[in-house]
Structures are given as structure tokens and as C-alpha cells.
Length: 395
Image (cartoon, rainbow, N blue to C red; front, side, top):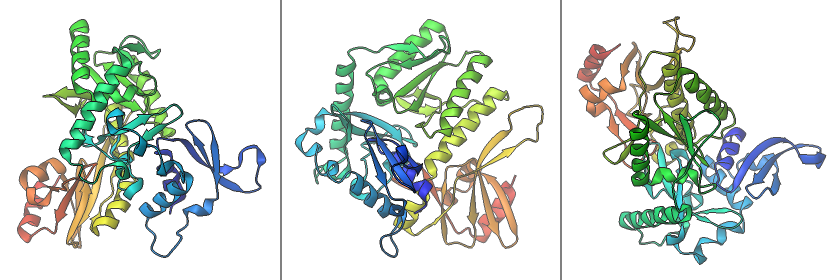
């Protein structure tokens, strides 16, 4: 397995603070190792060879599961079996966190958006014990999941007593949930409370506020009337967090009809372009680890989520950023991520179309794959008539 992908998978585990490759701490060894630092500040060293297959044909999912079982050989077997599943708190994470890694997988009990899921976790004295597939009763169903989520939100409200906000040093237009400590992001699962909070802020400032699930312990609220300077400074902080892989899905959201939706900023300013670039970067990060896992499960051709920039309008210092996926028309079917553009490649050339026009005009070529998060769409082999229509829709 690719070492960088393994480190990313390890870092996504809630009990692991960091997973790095390099010299052993304090010169303990003469060769490079994987150093895992846990949330309780203890550490463990792993030989880099753990990333190598232990038998021919071992998949990436099986490799990650094997390494996690080795690292948590005792913790995985204990914990939730002695606790009640109604004593949990919401665990809000990006969709890739809940990727199917068999019984080592955290369970997504609900989907707050196409890119953000809600799991459950026990807040133990020294660690956060995540509820995984193996902890659930065999007869659990959707109704059970909803009941557990409601109980977790009630526990969050009881733990916090009240909703409090504080600034992060960037002025009164950029605020953060300030409690309960280490569970601030969990409020994203409580849509009723967040709806009331946004309503109060809107009445107070006479402007719209957006909610940004930034880090595992940080839920931000930003006034859309913030100045360009405030937005720029804020985006500097978020973009820097991407470099250290410490973000969840830092995209602005609002609540519409009781559901979270992404707030799209279509203004042509540099701030607008940076916000659109942030959205593409967040989706790229979420999609990055998924295709290999899905290919193993479905055997379908998997198109990657790719990013391209355009600086045709050089009046801006920030280029426009687009997401794109490629479809080989010679394949029986291709699974594609949700992107701005799709490119149909054939022996005679390439056809560029927007995903929106494909969904509107040729829905058979853009079928949502049920139960797949982040969302993917199945593109079957186009008929001659559909190829002709694609030519008409081409950019």
C-alpha cells in the first residue's frame, strides 16, 4: 500500500493525533519508522514494512484494517460492549472517514450532507471511543440509528448546558462554538440548535451567517458581510490548515428547510474565487481515498476527482478553479465523482460537458449510486444518439 495513503488513513482514526514517517524520536533507531502519536500523547513506532502486502492480492482496505488491528490490538476488543449506545455524543466527520474498512470502520448513523456524516462516540476519560460496525446489534436498522442520533444530540445539549460563542482573534464577524471542549464540531449534528443560533445572529446583525465545519474541534460561524480583509485573513488560516491535513470539510453551509446545504459564493472577486477553490480542495480531499476502496467492492471503472485552474481572465490574482472527471466511452460503465465538468473520451476526440447539463438533458448517463458517500454517479456506455446529444451539449 502507498505509504502516504496509509499515513492518511491512520491520521483519520479518532484516537490517533498524528502518524508520520521519518527518523525515530530521540534517535532510538538508526532507520526511519512510522511514528504514531495518540490523543493521550503516548506514542508507538511501526516498521515501514507494515505497508507492504502480507499476502498476494491484499487490498488497501485490508491493509488498513490489519494495521489498525495491530495498533489497537487490545482497545478494539474492549469498550463499547460494556457501555450503552445511548450514552454517546455525535461524531461529525467528512465522508471519507466512514469509508468501509469492514469491522474496523466507524459507523455513519446519518448523513448531514453528501460530504459530511454523523457517527457516535463515547467520551471516555482518556480517549474518544468511536462506535464501529462491530459494536452494533445485528438487528439494528434505520429507526435504531435515528434513535441513537437523537440520544447523542440530547447528551451533547446536557453536557454543554448552554450554547456559547467566542471569537478566534479575527474580529466579531468570525466566531466559534466554544464548548463542550473537544466536541465543538458535534453541534453540526444538532440542526435545530444551529438553526436557532443562526436566526439570532441574523436578527442581531441584519445579515446572513454561514457555518463552517473546519476542524475536529472547531465549528466556525462567519458573517457574510465580513470585509474583504476579514475574509482574506480567515481564508489564509483555513488554507494553511489544509497543508497539515487538519481540516474536516471547511466549506460554508446554511440551513434550508431543515437541512444543511453548501452556500455557493459566485461573486467574481478574489475572495469569491478563493471560496470556490476551497470547496474544490475540500471535495478533492474527501474523494481522494475512496476510489480504490470502491473499485475493490464493485469492479467498476472509477474516475478520479481532478482539479484544473483557468487564468483566462488575468485581471484576478486568484485563478478560477474547476473540478473535472474523465469518462472512457469504450468502457461499459464508469463511476464518476460529483464534479463541475465531465470529459467523454473516445477514439475520435474528447467532449467537455457540465455535470449539470448532463443531469438535466441526459439523466441516463448520470445516475446517482445509492448509498455511496461522498456521492458518485454511474455513467453507462452512451448510445450513438446520446453521443450526438453530447456533441450538442459540448462546451
